[in-house]
Image 1 (spheres, rainbow, N blue to C red):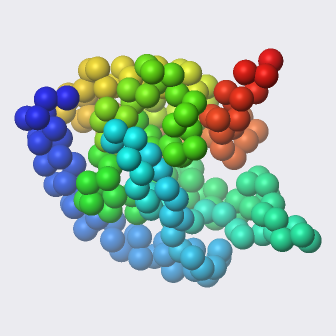
Image 2: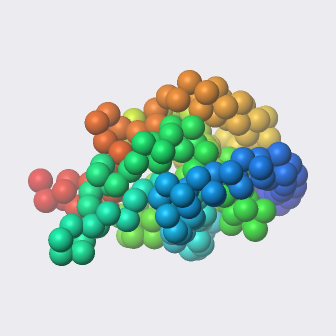
Length: 209
């Protein structure tokens, strides 16, 4: 991506993220109090993710899962830890609001390939790894074209398409489509699952077959 386009995208991201933080700050405060009361501490889910050029950063989201464990102290499966309240946060994408601070920090963009776990880095093909040529986004081309109902190969294909075809107009289009998807609550998670199967586990299984 050319330098001028990078600056334009950064300015666009910073202005919109700053305005959204101001507008949604009462909502974020209310959600923080509700999470504290319904799920307990901590309020935020913080996890290391991979960003531009494969560099790691800490992603911020609102917590949606309970800290429920079995008799041996191991965390229960995700399906048993997501509460009704947590599901509401996920289905409305309100759990993503703290990621606006990642945009302000410069770790992320409003639009781009979703940031994934550092564990996945050794498993990308050369083409798939091109998703790291731009900053990751809160939403992206893959998210408005199927989101979590897509398989990994298709998601990465859409991510690379975005890298090759980026423009501010495309970002505006994706943001508008994201709003519509959020209102309709479409493609939040794979059928009968809370979240997608890990990419590294998919690749290892395929290699064993």
